[in-house]
Image 1 (cartoon, rainbow, N blue to C red):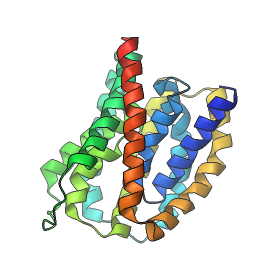
Image 2: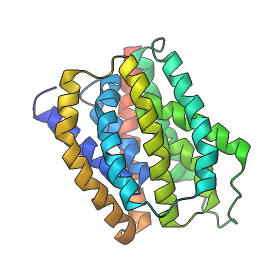
Image 3: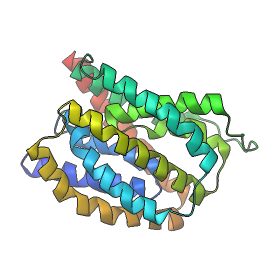
Image 4: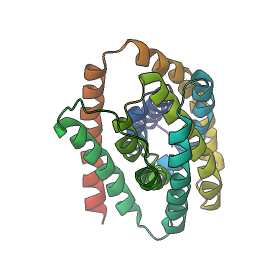
Length: 248
């Protein structure tokens, strides 16, 4: 973990983590793929988890008064199941498959955003069964690659919460998910003195970026912003899919 290439990728990934905790969870999908360009996705996920947890604290403060209790009560139990499945299967899934899975998650989400027709449908109710299912998928993908936002958004976007409540609910949900992931990551040997040292150096970058994310939620035109993010995610995801295929 040295050289300018690694540090450029690591600082960029930390900034993406912080911005995502500022209320733009889709940005977080870029963090592991970005860092996985210079280290393995397994190493990237382990290194970034402490950065996520510290960033969560700032995000919780920023959105402490804006969240949907019902959505959290539905999604989080499912997410715990997904984390457990991820933990149970972590030692039997080859690294190349993990690389490809990270890429496929990002590619599917970006294609969905590009190809999905815009609809002005009425808000859906927060139903229990779909919420438990997508919460479990979100917990699993979050455990594997910190890519829990896409399945989470499949459930929550149709609910059409206000922008602030959506950001706050997302921040609280993933703060809990990330905190729970600490124990299984530790048990799997994902933390070392080296990556914890790097994580500590990246934490201030992520903390500052949280408030950048909060500001972006307020001022940036959503269409332009998400168009840029979507195409960036697609490009990185295609690279990771190629790396996974060639590594099998």
